[in-house]
Length: 540
Image (cartoon, rainbow, N blue to C red; front, side):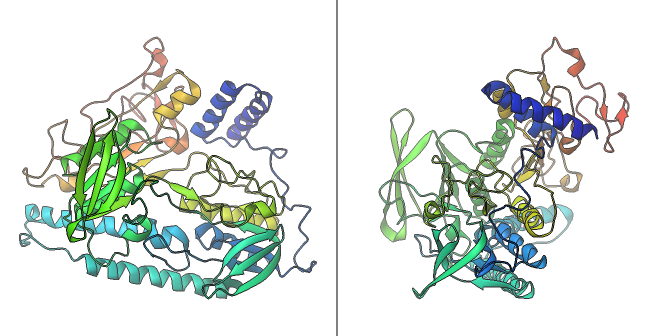
């Protein structure tokens, strides 16, 4: 009840401050930081739009067509069908510049979360075998890794998921159309299959869930001599010495498991690592990777990629100070961002508006400016690009349209994890985002060293981790956890401390505000405690 009342108050302030950019940004940041639902009934679109007839009362081919067979689109289609809607899913993967394509399921299953985590696990297993000797296991020296075996098993697992998705669509009575869909008008799409055959399909409603694809470099050789995350997980041969261009989480994750599998990895970064994440945490990730052999080429941008002898790639780059550099690598991986897949689907023919800066769709409650057309997943402007978010948004949208529900997706305070060698989890605002949105308000930054006991017997000769580099203790691989603490409050969704490999608690707060010092807090159940319980000087 208190949360609802606070949300209503913030919603009123947000509406009244629409002409004042800074107060509105501050209130919006408070909403995100504390996980308050400030969406009121008058802000939300209608549960059922007036422009779409009820199932079975129209002459369209389908009640609902979902364009895109990723996690969010499949969730929307299957759940809509369960509530009596006649549904179809159009999904077609255009090959990458390197010629890679894949099956039903979208980015996460085929070229994202699933293969990335499996290869990250492969790297962790190699590290565990190295540590096993400290625990008495007589493992041989120089154990070799077979990239081909790993890729074969990873791809077999992915194909089983592809098959499972098709079976689920059949069970849910959802038509699977393996063709590329393009809008011809607001209720009609033209579908082209792999043989070039064209068919026309109509629907009362549409859900756009086309996601995004990797962005390539606008330099000589920036497409034909590089690969992206679309290609890496199905390479038939090991990538060898790899240059990862970009310091996004995708780039650092790929560099991390390539390095963990025994190959050299380099990361070229223009400015900062993990843009959008808390930079104190990002620097801990970068430091850990450097200590374990990853080479960072900082303040540099590539200028060309060309073939070299022996199938290698010659890369030239330019530093911020005007000097240049070059190097030869077996593989060049580009991970400089992703572009929304909205430019080729005829979205302008349907009248749907997009953000001209990034091509993403601006929605209210997943509803576009065209009342019967909706969108979920990575193409939503200003929403988290996360698979569980897309799945939940698609499910709730289907419930609203066909199940009589009025539940909306809550995008505030969604946690996420970066699977770099030093794994990093966070929720809410980073410190930089809080300062930008709220100004120099009362806040505190918490940091605490984490030393997992399970790896405390590792041999002293192993490379230090971010957790022991500053404290002198070998604690294995710590986990970074970060959440904001704004204006002295500890919201229930963000009751996580930074565990950043620091020797002691670090506090950043206005010394003139002594009440911000953590003398009192709440325990895991949210119960108010004194200094002897709950949060006290950086400890739970």
